[in-house]
Image (cartoon, rainbow, N blue to C red; front, side, top):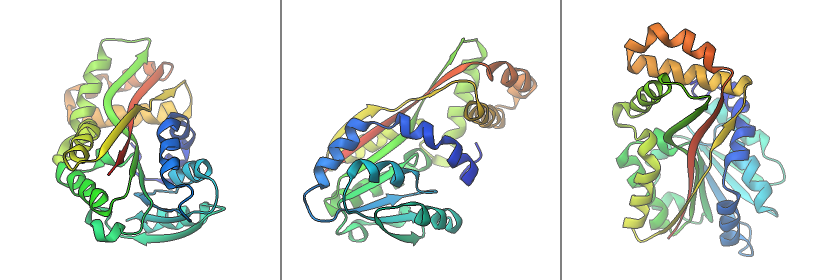
Length: 250
């Protein structure tokens, strides 16, 4: 994938917004409304797409604290949220502990958990539960992709991509299940809902497919000889890229 390039984040923003669970967002809203001005901490905020989507659903006065380790993205995010007060925090969000989240009304993140290790997810769950703050994590990949029409090579590229996501101890498609386990072990109530991307032929599908195929080939070089022809064929396909959202309430 194009990593955290602003261009990639902008390209995927509409698909992210359409995929996220409005049911869980509305439940999160019920937890923070009528309790003064809510303070929302957005972890790994990127260019602020989660803030733009969720702040509109929460409504009313809000204060957002945006966390990211990329100063360029943090500047873009801080300038993009309107109708709410904003502050930015540059640094490693995996170092956050319960004391750092004190006073927060809600912790949010989008497409973050699959980029973390088991220890980091456990620490994040402990920080949220220790601070007594609900957490809404959206768009964690689960390792399932459906291409229509299907063909036999799909499974090989999918499995290689999933293995690539698990490199260096990262959780990849296991992240949501690990997060549910971590929060429940600490006594939190957890709800999950599917949040699939539904992609037709177009710029987002082409860019997603390019990154998907490249990562698969990096993991399994034996796929390289078939990659270009496969990618060209599949650009005309429709894709469902499965994700899951979760809401954890201490």
